[in-house]
Length: 93
Picture 1 (cartoon, one colour):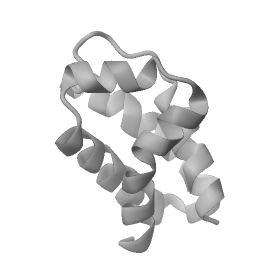
Picture 2 (spheres, one colour; picture 1 turned 180 degrees about the vertical axis):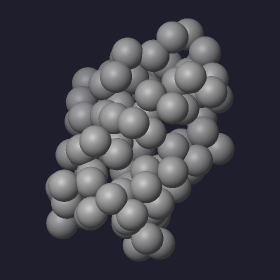
Picture 3 (cartoon, one colour; picture 1 turned 30 degrees about the horizontal axis):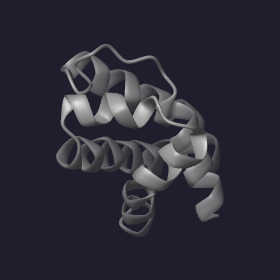
Picture 4 (tube, one colour; picture 1 turned 135 degrees about the vertical axis):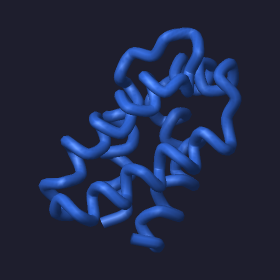
């Protein structure tokens, strides 16, 4: 199950971001991408909580520049750098 959520997180992280990684617009794009993929596994209510949690955790850890650097990596490196958020949020939804 963790692999499913990690895959979902990795997929929605590939949404193109502008150079200011966590502007409100980009937070919304990340949330929407996460929600669209997660609701089929979690249901609508849990997906909302999970995705909001994930976006919040990522925005607290990464600056705009760091986030841009993360998204420029290989998919497995993106996964490794962001899995803390999906694991934390999976436990807390």
